[in-house]
Length: 215
Image 1 (cartoon, rainbow, N blue to C red):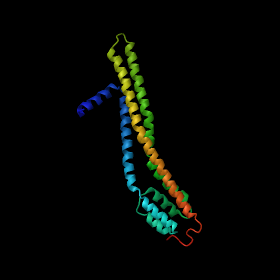
Image 2: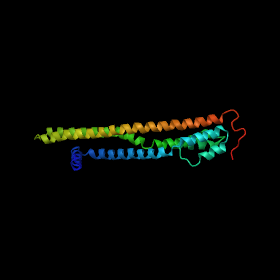
Image 3: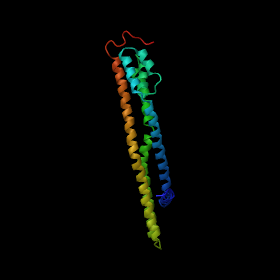
């Protein structure tokens, strides 16, 4: 289908959908912006991952050299390494609290705009339902008039159906990315917790760091 014809169809449906299509349009723009931002954020986030560096840090800690472990933490933006770095910098006191602060910041950044997606999943169908009500009200108003206009009745029904379809379409389109990125944020939280737990386990080993000091 040629692009101009498709554009005309979309504009025509938008107009026939009634006034409620304007807030639905705003919801659509917000949905596109939220999903687009998350796509770009996670693309940048994946480039920050450095699991090999994390293994090197743990190896240094296991060898009892905190100074070397801290040195290996420098120069990377991997969130798990940053959590471990915070714990190493705070050792021997306040390790858990220091790691928790960094982990919370990382998880909050990963979950950013997820509440917006979740809200739109609920809001969009409600806007469509509101369009359904206003469209049916318009149809009944035409039926109750002194002169029955078939165009007004069918126009009201068409408005109701278009608004409903648009609202449901936004909600359905948002559901998959919202669940997907929610799962990724939850997985990141688990990874950061595991990294912190592993570091604390190394600290608690009998005789750990007895012969090594930080410099």
